[in-house]
Image (cartoon, rainbow, N blue to C red; front, side, top):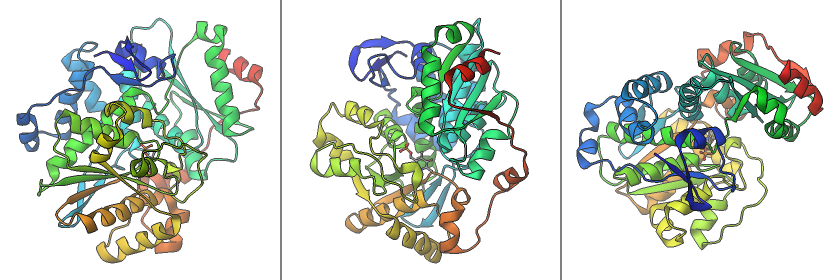
Length: 429
Ligand SMILES: *Cc1c(COP(=O)(O)O)cnc(C)c1O
């Protein structure tokens, strides 16, 4: 498979380039030159396939020019080694739980698939592949867990001291092995600036093969389409299926659009956002007006200029009316989201995180107008990741073992200031 830049369709590259560059030099985004067309029998036979088998069949379209079948099998079996169960709230309302991976958020799917692909590509390099990531919190945790113990790759995570939550810090600093955390005495922007400078530094690039684990990397998008098929497989009622996606950068929703293009019978996508409602507004009036984000209790969706919007536009040939016929948008503020968390618990005995709760509100609004629809809400993270929001609403909630045990683990991080020469000396030593 080759990949083109959304800024120039003539500019195509192979998988290796798309993965290691993340962003095309013209500042567009990579997209596959063709979207796999799955035949009706694939959809009809979903129930006879495991999640991994579904993922392998789809991956082959993207990866088979670079890897043989056995490699693709092992890559998927190591990356997608947890489930994506559909839990029923009522006859027409389901929850797709995407938090069964190591960092308890859906980003594990993208991070682990990217790690597995990069590791295989890096096997032929003469230089060791080093991933530099600056994180303001959540992405770092998924990337760290995703690359942990992966062959041929070292990961260096830069995070701003005192500016990530204690739990997030533990997710970055307690893993060891091929993951190194640098605690920077500065802001997220300082971390980002150090990473950018290293990418442009000739000496550093002579020593290391550098790459980023940026969220717009095409290998983070591809695996996010697998679980739409997996969810559909689990539905009892397959009429008028609607997916409702709590969204920030819109990677998750874009992956759903790819699944539909591949042949999954989806009747509608619901784009659910918090107060950062640039896309619902666009769907409403056709005007795209990116702006600075505002902070909310569903903070993984606090995005004012969604990076995947250009991919969504590209899929619809920039035609607003076509996008609007597939996607409907809703936005909610924090107050109603808190009420929704309580309502979901009281009505369905289900603990839903603040991001999923935004989805619930949108699903409810949609179903008021479409009473026959079967809505699947994507639950993007485990509620225990957001205790300061959840506990004032519901009291004490269950914390999974793998999160609880983090607080006892010992933090290991090197402290550095924001000076580039110091960072470079550390890298080169
Ligand atoms: C990243 C994230 C989102 C937003 O996903 P996008 O693909 O950026 O739209 C939603 N919920 C949680 C918990 C996340 O971590």
